[in-house]
Amino acid sequence: MTVRENLKLLVFLVGAALFFAVTLLGSFFGVIVFINSAGLPRDQALNFFMVGLVPPSVATFVLFTKGLGRFM
Image (tube, rainbow, N blue to C red):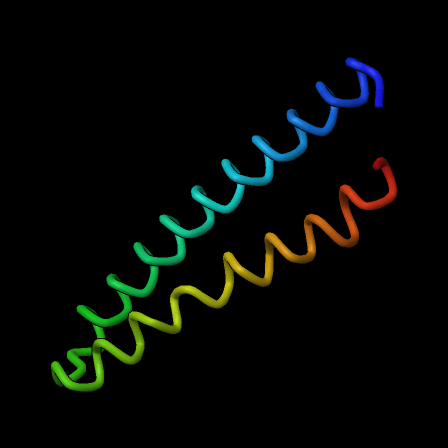
């Protein structure tokens, strides 16, 4: 691999990591707001909070396979 290809790959990986972090924080914020507004009991709130991991994971997978896969 050339230096240019390595740099391009590094930019893609850093971009994907930032995308995952932003969507993870946004998803957690949305789930916390939902839990507070719905008034869920404590034992169910943790289960709903863990569901907040699903959207950023799926979005990052789609970003890699559909979005960035054709450019690599």
